[in-house]
Image 1: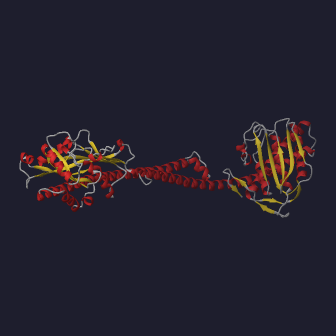
Image 2 (image 1 turned 180 degrees about the vertical axis):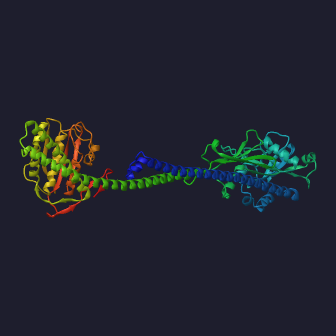
Image 3 (image 1 turned 60 degrees about the vertical axis):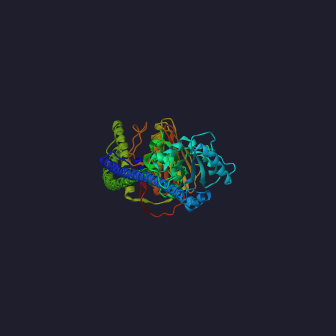
Length: 610
């Protein structure tokens, strides 16, 4: 990531204490932000868990309260029904229907499947009972099941008397042990008693496991409740009862309560039966049971004990603004802050470094210009004195003396060449390069330079091949164009292997004329294309140690070309050779005037300077 930031902002890394400090500060910013995000996400997670636990607990308590309250209203309905029998003695079917309507059972007790009355019968009373019911308009009525028993409790009235409840009409509840046990307890205790979960007669044709329960309250032949169990059994007249499915209570609650969470698992079960028989179960949570947070409450309902379990997983954990979202957002913001601090500090260091390099470069340029001027004068004097010796002014030299003098002259010439290059470089850097553009035949200039270098090329058995078919006119300063071509041809000869060829070609390139110098030498790696044009920079190659050079030739050549409005580019392959292309404009807007041009060049960081 840091490397990418360096590329984006144009920064470079150095192994120094300053850059190490920048990295440490950036990492510190990231760690502080990351830690803060982690702590905040943890706090939110803890708070969410506490809030969710509170909602689950409140939901379980609310279901418990609603269930107990609903069953309590059923008990009060049974007390009212029993009072009806106590007041009227025998209650007719129409009176029972009127009671049902007066109590507004469908509206007030919406979870009830039915409200009924069963008559207590001995075996010798069953036939007469059936005849009486048939006489009321039910000719096919009979007490079921038909097998003989010592006691009967046949369903006589049940409302609503719809097609579902008619299935239970005439059913003897004593025929079922679960119902009989609850009825016996209600008879003896004189209190509403709930049965264990049973498959209701109304639901026998259904394949689901939905169970129901019944609550019984005894009706005695006496005006008051008999005092002893023996008396209560002797005075038993029948039972009023309600029948319902516990699941219907919770379903109604879910419809009415805005607090009901439909993303949780709800379970209602009977604890008085081995195995905790399920009375109601809703699986709405997508979280596995073993990972759920769970709360359980218990409720006592008419001699039975029910358990209510509510479980689930906090959905806020998966929301964007939940703990995971906050943590991710904090980590991203911390990373951005760290990168910003890193880029800001690196940019500041780079700016300070740039200003420092400018000052250093300015000092170097001034020193270079001063040294060049100071060196040129004595070097020119040495050239004159050696010339006097070789011309014989001081007397004829013998062959050995002449050989030494000529070698000294050549060495001084090389020194003067380097000094002159330094002087031109100092002019370029100081912006004092004076160019007088005129119409120059680049073919003629190139031919002149080639003739000058034929002898140097012959030493390495290198053939200079030129292809000039016609004059190529450019607007340029003849002195500087000659210097550019000399540098390019000299460079091609230096870095070509012996017994090879250097080709020089001229061609049109739109509004420019291109001079291409192609050799079969050592070549240049693509990564070093720009480096060869840097000041005082020499690329290592198999010939760089044997061939001398100041590292200024190509730098100066390119600056002179750019000062004319042209350029120098290179294309090369290692071990295969290089092709340097000089482009110069055919026309110029300078119009033969002396102009103070400051050459453009790039510093070591690749930034353009004027």
